[in-house]
Image (cartoon, rainbow, N blue to C red; front, top):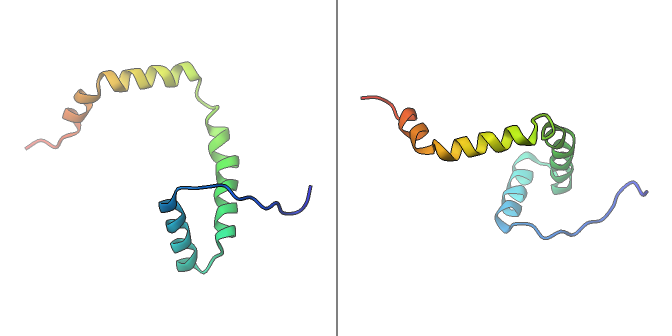
Length: 79
C-alpha cells in the first residue's frame, strides 16, 4: 500500500469550514487535522464502543427515554 492515499469524500459544509478555520488558526494543514481526527477515532473511539455490552446500552437508552422528563426536573436548580 502506498504511503498516502488520495480521498475525496463529501462532508458537511459547516464541519469543513470549522476544519479550515481551526487549521488556519493553529498554523496546521487540513490534512494534518484530518489525519489526527481519523487516528483518534480509529484508535480511541472505535475500541471504546466495544467496552459496553449492546444490551446494556439498549437498556440505558430505553430508561433514559422513559425517565427523560424526570431527569430534567431533577437537574433544575432549586430556588
